[in-house]
Amino acid sequence: MGSRTHPGRPRKVSVEDTLEGALQLFWERGYEGTSIADLSRALGVSASSLYATFESKDRLYLRCMRHYGETRSEFVQEALAEENGIHALQALLIGAALAYGESGAGCAILAAQPGAAVDTELSEMRRKARERITRRIRRAQREGDVTRDLRASDLSAYVQTVMGGLSGASRDGASAAQLHRVAELANATIESWRA
Image 1: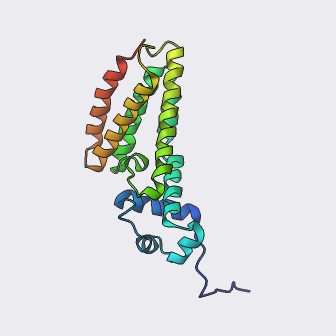
Image 2 (image 1 turned 180 degrees about the vertical axis):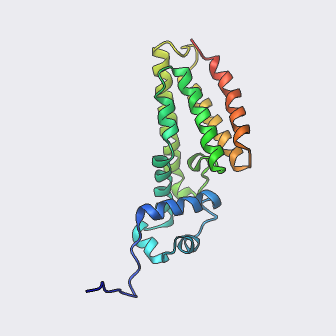
Image 3 (image 1 turned 120 degrees about the horizontal axis):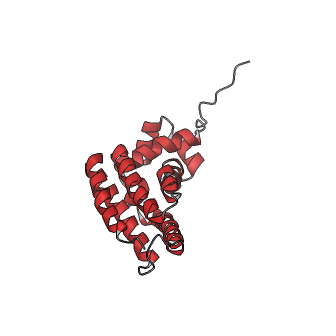
């Protein structure tokens, strides 16, 4: 016996498939530049299905940003796992240059400039990322890799600022090779933090 269709009922949305498709659209057009109608057309699902699954554009956007962090942050984990603290920070910037150069669109979270409705949560995501870098720097200071003459919070702010710059340059059309050269210049500064 075949399954019965209900023409008046919105088609159920596959969350995983939808997140990847919606992420690409938000990443290319930005939060403000992407409407529910755009998402519905691009994903091949009705607006009512999107609302039934995600409740609002804001919630869908935030789910996409979390999905981005979960699926595209391998380079961050690998870099921060480096045994030497200086090498970890340098690997982080090289990894960012490679990842952002490959995407051609920078980092979705660092580049995000949505409306106030979701900005607080995005700021919190960026704060947590910076805190993770700060913890790695403090560990490197305890282990004698990074000088204690500099504040860990200032060093992590520097690293995240460079990553933001790499992201912005990628969105503006910088090549992967250019991003790599900028990362190497920043890494020369990080080398000066050696204890």
